[in-house]
Image (tube, rainbow, N blue to C red; front, side, top):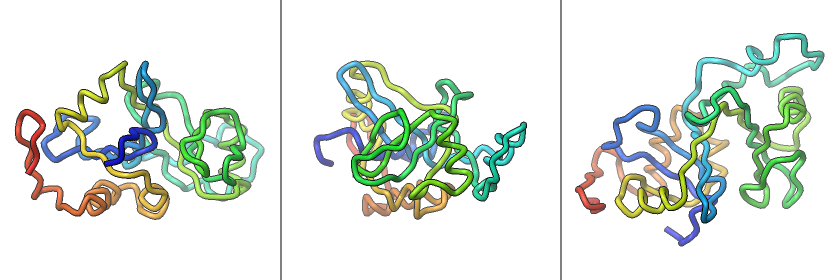
Length: 187
């Protein structure tokens, strides 16, 4: 893996059995010396955008049946829109993950997405995952996570429930052929 942690994709190895991270795929959206920020990409929560927007909104949503994803165990009631945009031109306050992808907590952006007014694809996530200073580096060095390159195809062209297996395809291995040996070795 290249030496950059963000943006990249973390993949939970089969040995990671503890919920909510078992069989998870996480985009690492930010990595700095004081910590890391990520969003789970493959956990629909059984709620659609319509379910979240029915309470008095005047918009005429066309993407309201899109599933909402569990972004992570931190601040589970906060929504984040991950969306495509023109290179280096985010549409709302938040942060740019890559030149054409940003994440924003702006409610107005969600309304625009649901109404079909964004220039590209999007996902809505509730919550996020975070790591303290040095924590993610330690977990990666122990082999607690597998890491692969950032991929818009994995994020937007693959249904959420298929993203874990697809991420293993990017690594060129089958998930249950993977063996984790204590100390960070893999086979």
